[in-house]
Each structure stands twice: as structure tokens, then as C-alpha cells.
Image 1 (cartoon, rainbow, N blue to C red):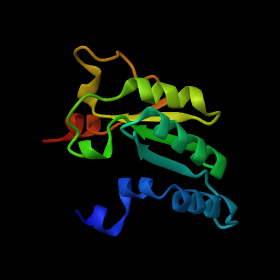
Image 2: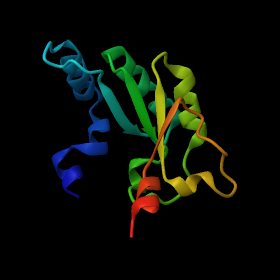
Image 3: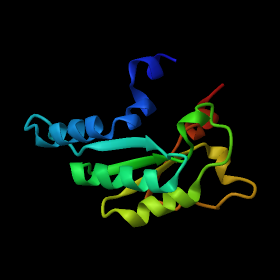
Image 4: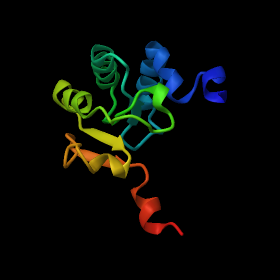
Length: 130
């Protein structure tokens, strides 16, 4: 994909030093007068995900949104990793939102995301679409 070739989107997670530098630069820039929010996906290993959220908090992010699927699940298949999102909430002092598909809240899944806020990916489309 272009994102993979160019190293942007979820592929930036392979370069935590670059991401940290970007967040620090935005936080330090006097022209940026709004909080710095960062969205990420979970890593296949929970420890790597927690390390990344700690890095984002340390770099000055004001809020982190964690998409509950790995980069390999770019077509939103497979279960949302609610446990890792919940672990992220408990790991940092800044707010953590969860990002998921609206249908992740049906069936055997949790009745509500284990985070302080949520960003369902397709709920608005289901309600407002044709």
C-alpha cells in the first residue's frame, strides 16, 4: 500500500522516535493552540502497545485514541482488543478513547468500550447513509 511504502498512517508506529519528535514539536509550537490528539492501533503484543502509549504521553499528547485492531487488520476484521484498550486506559494519566466498529458492541463483546470516550468508525454512516 502507499501508506506502507511511504511510511505514514499506522506504519509510523514502526518509528516511535519520529512520532515522539512530531508530538513534541506540535506541543512546543506556539502556533498550535489546541490540544494534540494522537490515534494509533494496538500492536500484536500488549507490552509494545503500552510502551507506545507511554511514549505518546511523555511526548506531550493530550489524548490518545486506540484503535482496537492491529495494522494487519486494516479491513476491520477480527475481534476488537478491548482488553488492550482497557490496559492503555490504566497505563497513562491522559484520556484514552477507543476506536472501533459499531458492530463490535454486539454479540459476545463488551457492552461498552473500556475507555473514557469512543470513536465508532461506522456508526454515523449506518445512521446517515442511504
